[in-house]
Image (cartoon, rainbow, N blue to C red; front, top):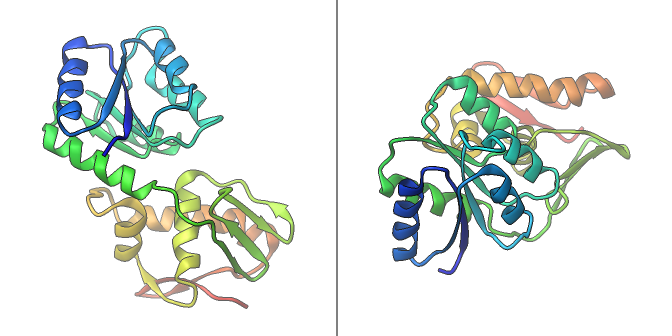
Length: 224
């Protein structure tokens, strides 16, 4: 295990504590104590994962996250004392892979790091298709009849899982576990919300019945 992790955290004692624990686990670490320095280091592209605090001097963690996501898909776990739903949703929708609230047990942080690194490990590129739609996992692009469809990370991941299981009816619980993560503790209607988002960008725009509802069971994509 030689993954390189960038710690962007302005509280030096916390950063040092995380650094020592990660080093003990075999990770190589670099620290930054403000957003601007952290962003400059992140843009070198040398890291396998970034631990990013939200409350940072010079540039906020959210702004650092947005700027990184313009050019990089490096895994990012947000660290913050702010635990409101709005903050979590904002961070995840801006491209964070996970979110952990201070104070946290180091064992939980290590488990989340392992999970994110495992889930974002490079895979063979696959092209999935249904009813004229093409999803490219390598380029993370979605097109319908040659027209690009702009999706958020969560929308892409949900569509990807539905396409991988084309023809199978998937319950909300299965979708939550595989797309949101086994430890997701929010409302199950999150699935319905994101299905509506996808339908708004696919079904309604292209005037097709792409994502089908099986009442009382879940959702399915059929290859018409």
